Image 1 (cartoon, rainbow, N blue to C red):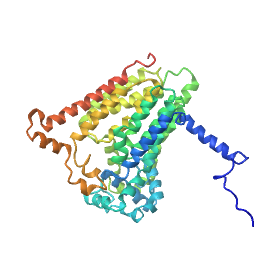
Image 2: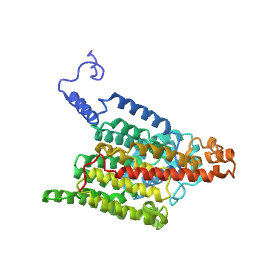
Image 3: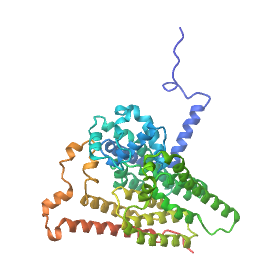
Length: 457
């Protein structure tokens, strides 16, 4: 009787052919490139951040989370991953995620289906049934896994980018424990981490002067969020430098062509797949795309476009600077303009967070503005709470208990009364609103300070 073979996973040395050794060496090399293995402090930080995320993931989601995955479920039923063609890459990632985890969900995910596919958001009764399902905790956890994966991947990209920076630990901490990103990805339950990963990747490649790779990564980012279309002129201008050689000109034109091809691909996807979309049938597909990009309030557009034009002029006048620095500052400044002049949801400011952290690799330090704005963001949304922000729609599996919870504005009025004079709720909201705006202006001012950079022409 022959003796059973021993597994190399449990006993004995690595096989003599060296395949396992080479594989292990490649894995170690990939980890070492980010510098995590050489810094136990960063490993502990990542472990704590993962624990925080894993504790939050099963318990919260905005009603938009149900609306999003309801569309994805309908597209799986029809075998068309681009049934709703906006944000093609995000849709494809969520489509793959739902296909993989559907056997683990209640009713194989059928409870995600809404009666009316044209609803922009789920109705309250749909949401109540969703969060009352016994498997809701498992559902929320599994469907947020791609957001966690891209969140962690962004931290790794930033870690590698900041490997030689003395402020590396601070930058990674600001990403891993920022209330805006944790709220956007795991409390509100939106796919912002996917788009932010590709933006971080773009900035990292620009920092290493790998312009073709950066153009490719930026092209992928375009397919993740409508707001990124707004960055396209900024990216093109950031790539355009004082080109004295034909080779440099050709490389820049190739990069710009890659971005334009990606823009054209979005049109092709909408043309090929959008005709079957319920939104196209109802005539809402194009209007919804326009609303997603510019539909917050018409009154904000004039000052915003004036500021956008000034940023473009600044890009043209600073052609001797690093493309990564120019693109990072320009995109961050444009977003500051959006949040100064536009009505926006609580999770939108997470769009800004990747830019200042990447800029630390070029010694553009904005730590204080990030911290101050994060504090003002928390205060602003606590005092401006409504049913769609921190209360009813976010208390998903705990909704029955949370329905009776009073919000901070309600408690404030109980403490100070409806007519509180200088201490009234209106005055308190106005105060934090001004603080919010002041922190944004301070952030923008710090961005354009030239200390820490080479002189511009």
